[in-house]
Image (cartoon, rainbow, N blue to C red; front, side):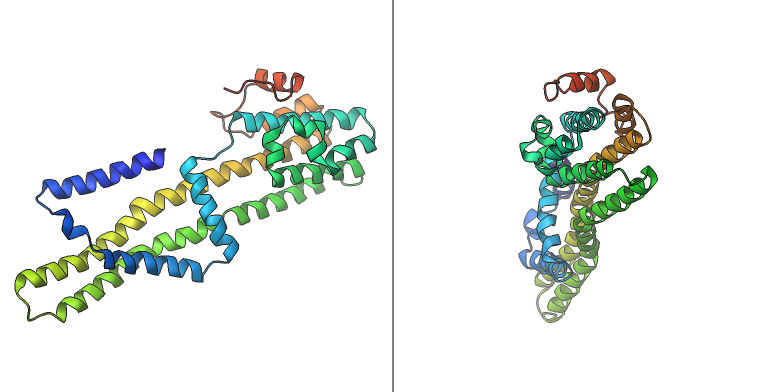
Length: 289
């Protein structure tokens, strides 16, 4: 919603001020300039990006518009699953724990946390490291180093679309100059025409420069920044899992280990201690604020 409101403000101010100074909107409507700029930018984006990145870029833009970041329910579900697994690690046999991590879709623990179960990558991340804890041979600092490497890889992969779109956005001003030069060349080919005709052709050329800068700084940059913010918040769930499990491996009881994970959440999004305690007592039933 913020993106839509921001774009309305951008276009309202630009177009409104242009019209207030006596400008005519039909002068700004130069479809061939738009084709040159947008088409060249998209073409370069497709040429320089693997198909997976192209598809993920569409998904990332959708997440940015919907501001699809973890809510309190996501955090509570993640902490609730970790608490249940750590509790069972202390009280139940290896076979009972393996039943949960080998088939999380059928696990009573994961079924109480639908937001975790829906996130297949996060579910796999939790199950893989709980399995390593069950084996019992790995030391906590080794597991922590491995988690850091995997989280770095996850972050790198999730940001590929961000970097690809950023490169496209950064190219629009230069492509706008290309469109403007093509317009000037067209105008020079009509140098013998009356001044009013030449004025229209030169104005059309300048619209190319205007469009390239507008696309880059007022449309693409805000969208790209929002993609980065959304993906960074989504990846925060992995850090919560890491800090919680490492604290448990270092000897903390499950209740204390959860605090290590909870404290990694931004203060204005962090569930309260009471909410986490309620989640431990009644998994999946805590009312998120």
